Structures are given as C-alpha cells and as structure tokens.
Length: 197
Image (tube, rainbow, N blue to C red; front, side, top):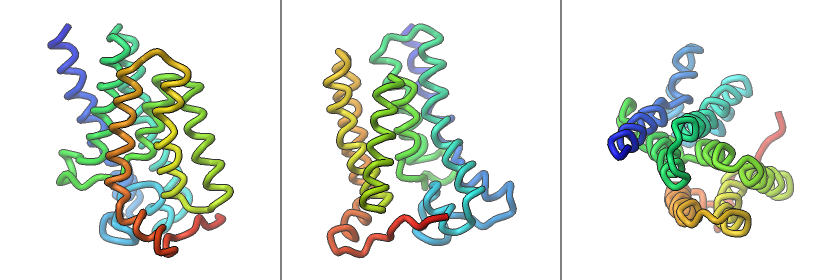
C-alpha cells in the first residue's frame, strides 16, 4: 500500500501540473496568461485578460484538479490522512507545474477543490467565506487569504482529522507566501477590486 500511496502522490502532482489557464488559453487561441496582467496563470488573471468564458473554464479546471485526485483516493480506500496528502500533491503541482517550467498559479481554486472533496460541507463553508468577503470587500486576493486562514479552524472544529488541520495550515502558509505581492498591495491600498461582468 505504501508503494500505491507514493504512486498516487506522483500521479496527483502530475494532474495538478496540468495548468488549466495555459491550456485553455492555447486551445482558445489566446495569449499566455503568464505574459500579461498579473502574470498569474489563474482564473482571475484570465478574466482580466480574456473575459468570463475563458476564466470560467479555467476556474472549473483548477477546482477539478483538487477534487478528482481526492475522490479517486477515497475510491481506492486510502486512509483519511493519505487522502489529504494526495490532494496536497495536486495543489503543489498547480503551484509548480512540471509541464510548464514550474511557473504555476497561486493555488486558491485547487485548494478549494481539495477541501470540497475531503469534506463537502466544510469545503462549502470555505467557498462561502470567500464569496462573503468578496461581496463585502470586493478584493479577490483578500477573500482567498481569509478563506484559507479559516479553513484549518473549520476542519479543527468539525472533524477529528488532525492531519487535515495541520496540512491545511501548511496550505494556508503557502498561499500567503504566494500572495505576498498582493498582501503588500492590500496594505498600501492598491490592490485591484473585483469588477462586475
């Protein structure tokens, strides 16, 4: 089973390495999202550069990269802590994709996908947190930071899986690191607001 676990980690990382933003933009004949806007290959930057359709497909793909490995891991009977780390591998793949020069996104949608597949109701609470903060403050990056910060507390309060709690805390630290430029702009009051379609 240990071999199977490490194999699953590797396959999950490869799934995460499929950069949805770059693939979608290539298929749709658009430019590389890493070369425009914020330079981040994620749904927010794709929307900024190329509109809602490409962004929606990117978001769905990034979510699924977190959902699919976790559900497959559950299906193969891995232990709950192993299931989390399999999802975590997809998250790392999204951040550092082997297929795209290790230049990936910031991981928010893939993290949400992992949470939804791990525990649907807690994942839904994390998504609802993102939506609420986005509605009130209209800053996408701040919404992501608040949602990721609360995720370990939701898991601590409503599950008995300590590996999920500590693992999600590690995810949160990584997300904060990946958003360090956004945090600086937030503190200066210069971060872009979410615009209506």
